[in-house]
Amino acid sequence: MAYSSVSGRPAHSRRVRPAADRGSAHSWTVGRVVGQVVLVIAALGIAIPTLWVFVASFKDKSEFYGSPWTWPKGLHWQNYADAFVDAKLGQYFGTSVLVTVMSMAMVLVIALPCSYVLARFDFPGKKILKLAVQAGLFINVNYIVVPIFLMLVDADKLLYNIMPNGFFVNNVFILALVYASTSLPFTIFLLQDFFASIPKDYEEAAMIDGASQTRIMTRIFFPMAMPAISMSMLFNFLTYWNDYIISMTLMTGNNRTVQVGLLNLMQTQKAATNYGRLYAGMVIVMVPVLIFYAVVQKKLLETSTMGGIK
Image (tube, rainbow, N blue to C red):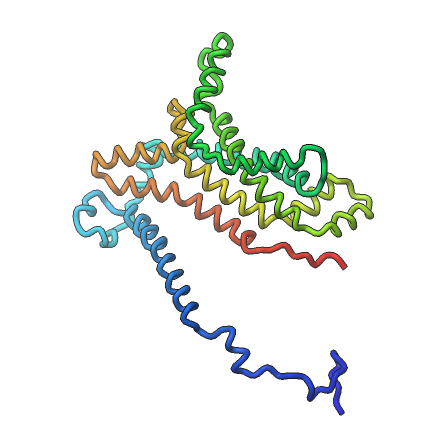
């Protein structure tokens, strides 16, 4: 009698899954067909307007008086040059990049160790801190932007003798600080749940090898939490980059962000009926979002592989 070299059982006793059963997992049921149709419609609903804006950004001013669905006769790159230079969208673009980078750096520096401590340590007042973080999730920053602005104005009044031009209002660093502070509850809440799901075996094995808590946090937990970190970075990036209300309120001078500059460009070009420059500005605003998503999308699809413990 022939025996299997792996299981030790007779070879003829192994059950062979019928081909029909193996293919049943991939069969097209009604629910699956409906789901695929809904996903295709949703994807087209996003892709078609995006492609239309991209195509329209290359049209000449005279081409918009005909059918809006016609392809441009040529690549009118002057629209991008006019939007980037003449409409000062390049200056606003640089301000948004600077504010977004500073905000994300602040959030990561504060949220990563804070969420790690809340997830892995027990100390007096831990429940109160976790409750405060959860309560921060229900605060919409758009509702408190006016009190924040008034607080910054009062702070500038105290510094008037030292800094007549003010410091807290119309300052990119203060704007980045407001962004970071208002997004901390969501980031900490997301990361601490991920850190808490990591088995203690990793931590104990590293402590046996003589690793300190700081080394365990930076060398073991942070790399394993990259899917959650990438997700929080993506949400925060979209929040900072697409913000209009906070930036419009706190940045009262000419140093505006790209969303405020895009609205000014929209109002100007509608009056001048130069829609090509307007669509070029929209493409300039969309490109960083697409690039950032392309960079982090692989990490978003990853899961924590807990296969390092033997």
